[in-house]
Amino acid sequence: QVQLVESGGGSVQPGGSLRLSCAASGSILSSNAMTWYRQAPGSQRELVASMASGASTTYADSVKGRFTISRDNAKNTVYLQMNSLEPEDTAVYSCNWKTWNLIRKYDSWGQGTQVTVSS
Image (tube, rainbow, N blue to C red; front, top):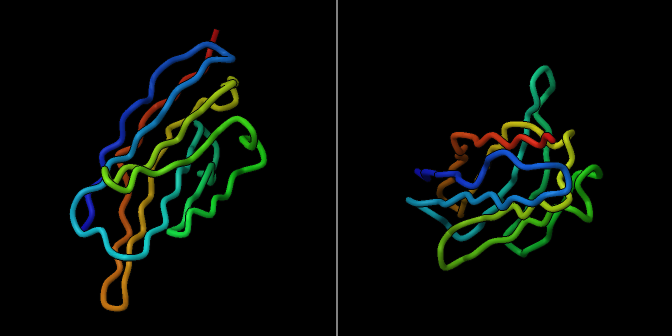
């Protein structure tokens, strides 16, 4: 299995920045896809940013140009750099990590971290 530990959430003023981290431990296999989701109160969970093993990335239109997903392979950690934060970015952010090979597949979630953008 894969265990995920998230960190880096907090409160920030509009226009500020935060960097979220999602550290994975356990059985990291040869193929991986890491995704950041967020869920605001009263809203459905939405995909924020995703990265596959080949480093291809996908972003929600609402965060393009402001957020960047990246991975440190040596640390088995995925990051979400969030710049120019807006009140609409306020949500609980969760990391999802899928890892697989020809024999096994694991699908794990982090505990979630609160991001609050407010003046």
